[in-house]
Image (cartoon, rainbow, N blue to C red; front, side, top):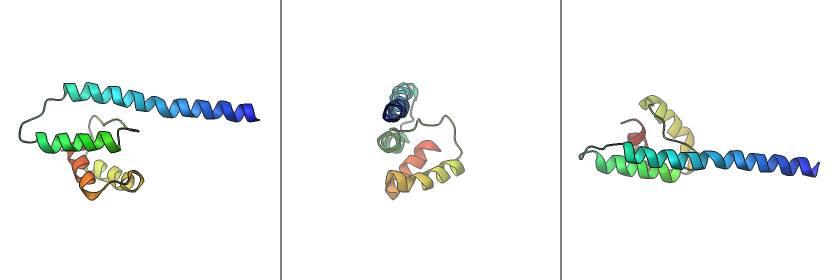
Length: 97
């Protein structure tokens, strides 16, 4: 019984940590590939930075998401990730410009 519990714990840890590595690699590729306009660079860069800091540990940035979906997700995750109102605003601008 103890061996089974240990094996399951190990498998769950490996599965839980693998998206973190993949998300970091995807974020590095995305940050190199995304050209930014000069005017929106400040808010997008800050929103992307806060997304990586608060959300990137568990999630990849979606390719395309509607503003309505982004707001709904941020409302649900705000409490779990302990996001400030400013974080929420900047991340929303990054996800759904």
